[in-house]
Length: 431
Image (cartoon, rainbow, N blue to C red; front, side):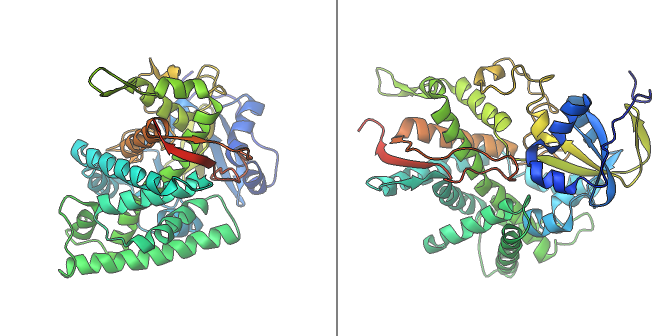
């Protein structure tokens, strides 16, 4: 059926679905897609018409920059906690492409390899501190490890006594995106503090008071010029530098989810363990580690949905997209869509053995093209960091997982078990 042919589009019979969205969280769109038997439906959110959709073809449509734009799509409350105001996520057209190139230029193979090395060392240093402790909260330790790694890699100075506080600021920014009340206020306060501090750093770099390596994000953000040839406003430059630091620290969720998967599916852990060859070198299944990481990103809930605004009137699958209408893409549901993934509720890394890497089916960090679209510039960085962290958990240390509640409430965005995954009896592998 062509996109211009008419078909019945379900419309939710409610005055407003905002409360339902907060109550159902990740499953809000997916539940209705299944109930309506449709990948698209209309509803009302915050008193205004909204279109919700999911699936591969919906994702392909969502990233059509001629039909949708991001400016005005991210609510101010989320800009003031998660993304910051004036950042790359809020831009469109040439301005977006120019700013996005700034981020992509930092993601060279050489620089990503450097981050891998920094992160591996930070994990090994952390393990030294864990030996002999009664228990370790893995999420909190991942926060500190990744904060150290992010700051060193990005060229941002960080004293050891600041690590926990700085890391927690970024966690609170992320933790605020699906929250109201105290959690949201904490995120806004954390962002305000971080932006002031990083803006001061940008000023020091520009004034010659602070020297940072040219290949780092701190240097790139400080000296980036917009399409008008002018340096970014110091606050906007700070927002963009935080858009490097915050996502790296946020990988703490994926580290925790990886550990949960290792615990729940021990056969996977066996396939990831490396064996020593005759020369003493470690040998393992590198492909399986990649499949495992991708399955963690597909299976566990992190990004629930993404928003855009209709740029011009058009019709798709019988639905009238009116200019200015809010559209939400079901990220969680697309990653679990049975039309795309066989037996999607089963954790099975082997499904990626023959996966061809489509830009609109696995979309935990957005879909489309990294360079020309709004897909996360740090996706490769995330995958590499997850693989280093996974190798550490499987091959560098051993530990036990005490009894604890590891249930994930999908009404909480981002999802987080109450215990934040506790481990105990940590030892070096082989001891």
